[in-house]
Image (cartoon, one colour):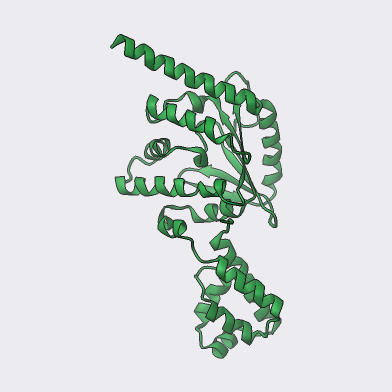
Length: 288
């Protein structure tokens, strides 16, 4: 299954429709009168805020006298904008602007000093992290948030997978998030996912002194046809920037990678920490 981002496809379709209307010198009210649709509906279509039907788009393309090439592009966007089942089931639990960008991206670079990145988390680890961050939420909502996070992983295993490069702080590996057993399975999972050719994991050792990542976690999303996007966490939500700050964080990323262990040595460290946990469990068993 190829990757698509329904919200971004709707936005692109809306831009095409707006440009076509402007090119014909028509107002929204003119398009509404010609198609029998309301001004509000056409406005929502142009803003990419509503699902669309092929019939409505076809009517507008007739009014705008769109050429065959433009029709093909617009109707492809209509088809691609249909929400896939996993997105529909978890809409309420998703931070949609970010998820839309993640789905569209070709490459993701993530610096996480204190946590395992979301796309590499096990369900148990994810639940422990989300529950600790949002202790007031109901059990049902926590379950929905975990399922939504797990559903996002499809971008790593589809026919056109996301290239993911992460640097994780050693502290994230040693903190027993969710308990020793949950953490042990999380470390095992990390050792497995790095076997995928599209995933690279590096570890920032605790022995490294001051470095360019001390300002906190961030990630960069690279696209085939859009500017690179910077995402910085801010409480429960986050901030997306495609402006001047991106260049600064591109530089930070390169310095962070240079300070971290290379991939092979990083895997050795993860395996070593996993081994320490196993020995600790064995020692406890012997004392019992």
